[in-house]
Image 1 (tube, rainbow, N blue to C red):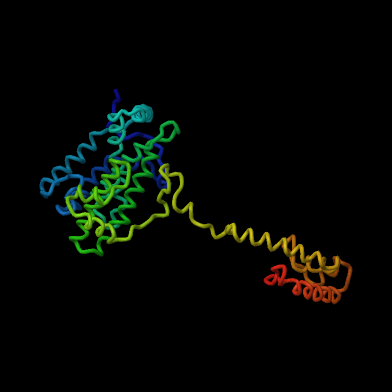
Image 2 (cartoon, rainbow, N blue to C red):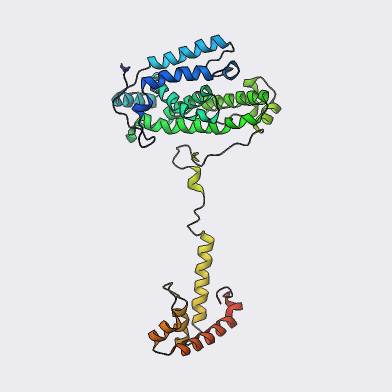
Length: 332
């Protein structure tokens, strides 16, 4: 039997800002202050179909207050309890997974509050964060030695930030369109969470009780933003930023082209006399990348500066004559 504690843990490992940790996020005082802010931001229109599932203003506030009180009743768990719950959840114990999720619901509120400046209702951010938390519970592998809070924070932030980025653009839409779009996206996210697949427009339309064409039109209203931090695989091992080209790294085609050009250049140098080849090699830094002056080349070869210039002119004339057949025009 898991005994859940009601006091904050003294130490929980979580990667947030350098000066923050999970214990800070889960302070009871912060959750208490969240209750007032959440209720102030939730309007009857925004609550429709949301966490509360009611259209009555007073009823919604009562239901949401109850939701927040329920969160506070779900105490924090120790790391040992967390491992036990995760092990049971991985074996298919739905109750264990529910406890693991419920014990971290306050973390969702604390993270969601940091995105309220985007203009998205806090209740919507919390709902998206809860979906991220559930996703984290499904993917969590306790055998890797990572705390669940550490792992879940990434999924929660990813879900909340994505919702903030997408929904914050709705202020440019007529209110009735924005309201319907929020509902369609919320239902789509719920269907995706339940089935593990992106829902078809037909499925969304049936769940929303609207026409399929309306779903397609609504989803096409706003361009879907893509975060550079968005995962590109199910395990979240790589982000979109990892797939972007590094401007400091030459493209494979350029590298191959330079290699072929180098081979052509060495073939061309073979047609020069040993002294002409030495002059060209030293003057243009072929091989070591360091070009020399006429004086430096003359000292290395034991000839005058003028003689070096003459040999260079003759060698370049020969190379230009071969450039057409050896693809060296850009070099000479």
